[in-house]
Length: 203
Image 1 (cartoon, rainbow, N blue to C red):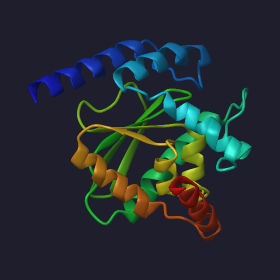
Image 2 (image 1 turned 30 degrees about the horizontal axis):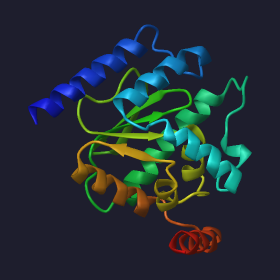
Image 3 (image 1 turned 45 degrees about the vertical axis):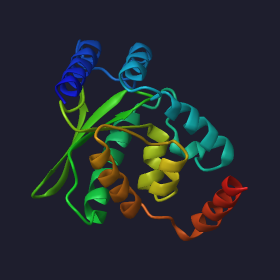
């Protein structure tokens, strides 16, 4: 336990040292995100797999070009911030039990958000320098977030396809995974695709 806390503390310090000098993300300075992604993949092993999953989901038609931001889009940060807050509202509304506090990083821009439950729901503190000192870290990316909040991808599909990855204590991860599945259910037009994907995997 002491070792885990030490490793977590060192991870937060490393991330803070990488990000703090200007508190910029990839939306503000695209060149700043490259080294930050490398550091993330060291602290959270295989976190970069999320970006591969995003590319695969686009090829498979699970994600659409509309879910992605475009170079030169001056409103990308504002739109993504709205999606993060919408994500918090939907997750809180759909949760059947108390949610744990957690942090989320969007791999493309390396944009950190802290989600903390409270009396008024799930507060989203966006554009922070580093994750919470303790708790789960959720790794995903901008297109997956957009697809989730727009109801185009269910929580189950996002998790199963690798668009969302979790790091932390297994009990808290299972709690958050369950909440994500309930809050972002499959839509009617997704059910057939979900069944075809399941059948393909089972062969």
